[in-house]
Amino acid sequence: MTNPTDSQTSRPRARLVLEDGTVLVGRGFGSANDSIGELVFNTSMTGYQEILTDPSYRGQTVLLTQPHIGNYGVSNEDEESGKLWLSGLVVREACTRASNFRSAIELSDYLAQHGVPGIDDVDTRMLTRAVRDRGEQRILITRDMASTDAQLVAKVKQAPKVADVDHVLKVTTQQKYTWDRGYESTFSPKPPAASGKRRRIVAYDFGAKRNILRSLVACGLDVTVVPAETKAEAVLALQPDGVFLSNGPGDPAICRYAIDAAKVLVHKLPVFGICLGHQILGHVFGGKTYKMKFGHHGGNQPVIDLTTGKVEITSQNHSYAVDPKSLPDGVVMTHKNLNDNTCEGLRHKELPVFSVQYHPEAAPGPHDALYLFKRFVDLLDGVKV
Image 1 (tube, helix red, strand yellow):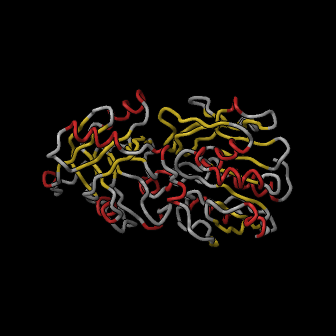
Image 2 (cartoon, one colour; image 1 turned 180 degrees about the vertical axis):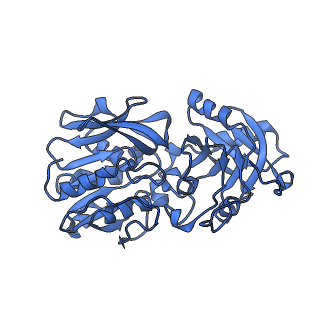
Image 3 (cartoon, helix red, strand yellow; image 1 turned 90 degrees about the horizontal axis):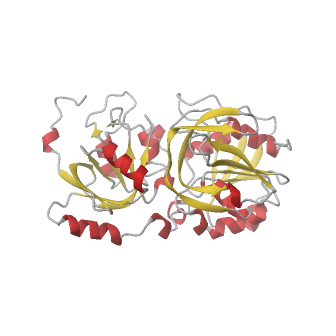
């Protein structure tokens, strides 16, 4: 319920414009900048700050289906990167006053600080159904009330699509660094069990979330993070025990530099991939990826581990998927989405390589899949998984 002391009527009007010609008028918050992104909806009940700071959202405008957003403010320890990567934020009602002892800044001020516009007081259920029915499409958020609807729709149609840009190169680190921090919050889960010997790995940063790096450290690994375009030879020169391929934004087929490096590394070292890293491994083994109609974005996706028969509720954020029919006989699908039967995990029959499409580190989301980090450690220890 909106705080009665908030002056809702004083907030500026804003327009939301879809490339199919839909135009809605709502209230602006956050930055006054115009922005164009590809509209996706996220069904997580909480965790908007982790979503805002996830590099995998670069080029996308996020619609949150939870209707009341911003009520617990923004806490520094919940950030998944050092900035906001999404193009814009769409919500039913943006809370203008947070109530949480952990909060350091209000949501609207946080968005404004990072140059990201938001819009609320629009029909988010209608927009969600539009994405489900017609697929992801470009969207403009603007406070321009003078231009005609036709002018704004034309502006949206002239903008590049997510698939037209290599977003990974926009979000990756520019230099190698060491990450040595495990879980940092008192609200973090119990770390996966670590083996007796610490292993050294190299993590490719295609847009890596901090909680992935925290999870790797928490289960007993020493982590060196490298830029996305790092050659396989440079990784091997570091003499790691294994390689991790991170999540990231955009179309995996564009990332030829990552695919070429991974083609070498899978024959040299154990490799674990998450999200974009999973899709890259699909390409490495001769498979294909495809653009999903509206993707999976949320903390409530049911997945079955086909190797154990156990079902887990997972956190997901992807618009592309691996086509399991395109994979060779040497690669096995290990996980399947129970909503639409899409591929959620792979394992090579001979090489020590596996991957999952979803996010076992959560942030936000459930912790059902943390066992996968232990599975990676076992692989580094020579245990067949």
